[in-house]
Amino acid sequence: SQTIHQWPATLVQPVGSPLSLECTVEGTSNPNLYWYRQAAGRGLQLLFYSVGIGQISSEVPQNLSASRPQDRQFILSSKKLLLSDSGFYLCAWSRGLAGGTDTQYFGPGTRLTVL
Amino acid sequence: EDKVVQSPLSLVVHEGDTVTLNCSYEVTNFRSLLWYKQEKKAPTFLFMLTSSGIEKKSGRLSSILDKKELFSILNITATQTGDSAVYLCAVPYSGAGSYQLTFGKGTKLSVIP
Image (cartoon, rainbow over all chains, first blue to last red; front, top):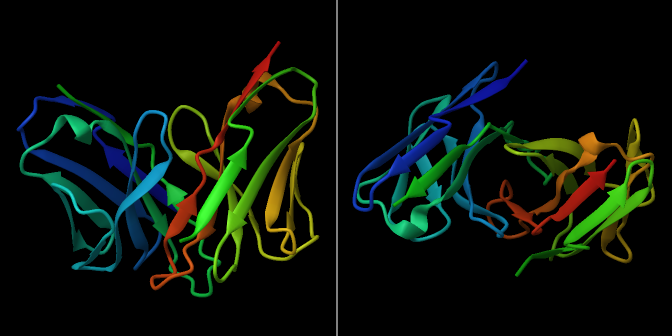
């Protein structure tokens, strides 16, 4: 069976500091990978998705970036955090099925507070 | 622009009640609709609906899709406190890049003893 891991679970960072969140998936190969942010009182916002190693699509222009150095590893980074980067960050994976029937499965999330 | 609207935004019921959560959508090219349950952390997948009028069921939860009227409902019978969560509805983005999901804002269900 497949499992998805994220770490850290919680993080408190000062404004202007760098960020690195990691997500790994086990039990599948060549998954699609996604980063979402969920701000308080708001819906899930897709930040990045990847259909393969080194292939990253950005959905929202911002000071965040993503990388996929290995097939089942997805990293979310920032060089300088802003207050507005606070939120709950979720990683998800899917099999990449075509035809709009692809189910995304979410990791446990990282709660980021920027002070 | 694809749109997913859930109602109500929040709901408080007593244990044993039956609840119905609504999700309406506007997408150019509909292919499926997904329901998730989000407790304190990650959303967990409940159902994917692709065909109109066919009910998906899992225990006390069931869901049905109406492609003509562009909505889905999620029913929970004999609610328990463990059903308290935010229920999210999502549809695949109909533009280029078919793997993306457009989510509704969710319905927060609180079940009180």
